[in-house]
Amino acid sequence: MRDCDADIPEKKDPKLLFKGIAEIREKGYVLNLRKNRWNIAAMSMPLYGDDGRTVEAALSIIGSAEDFDAPKAEKLAGILRKAIDECKSDESSNQESTL
Image (cartoon, rainbow, N blue to C red):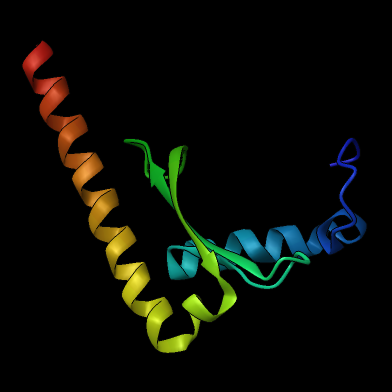
C-alpha cells in the first residue's frame, strides 16, 4: 500500500482495509461506489480455492453508481454468484477430465 499513489482512505487507515475484507467475507462481495471522479462503480466477488480461504480469482461488474442502487445491487450480486458457481463447476470438470 505504501507504493500506491492513489489518495485512498485505506492507505491512511489500514483498519479500513481489514474492515472491507471482513465485509467481503460476510456479504460475499464488495461494492465500490463513488470512489472516483467519474461516478464509476464496481462490484466484485472472490473465487475461493479448495481451502475456502485463498482467493484464486475474482469476477467484477462495472457500471455507473446508479446501476448499483440497493435493489439492483442484490440482483447483480446474484448474477455474480451464479457466474462464480459456474466457474467452480467448470474448474471441477476440468480437473476430473485430467485425472
